[in-house]
Image 1 (cartoon, rainbow, N blue to C red):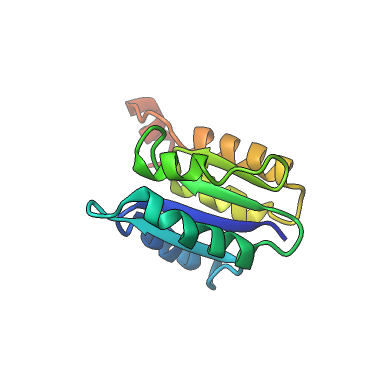
Image 2 (image 1 turned 45 degrees about the horizontal axis):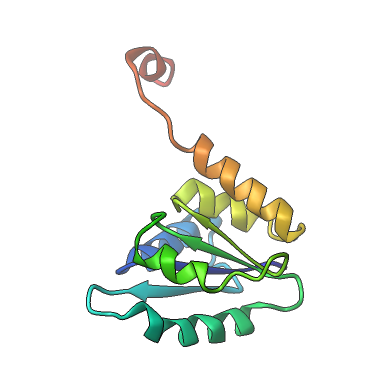
Length: 135
């Protein structure tokens, strides 16, 4: 099973895990969150992240999800990458997380692809025609 590390601003990661727990009916296994606060120095958090990755990796690899590309959490994540073993995706949203959790028995490359497609497909523009269909 692919381990998942969520690196986000503040408590966003923990909140997304709480939502996923509600969605699936139980807390997902092999998932950890690393919260980056406004006073945290990213360099100080790298050792914590590496320990989490080691704990999450059972041999299939780890997917690291970060909330916003170019921000402090994703800059920290860039230091953790190990091609084929530790991969990362930025732009985390709930559909992305649910998709990654659903397909994590597959290869790391497949889980990355599923996370990306889930994140993209979960962002839609509502219009009156769309709303009428569901009312």
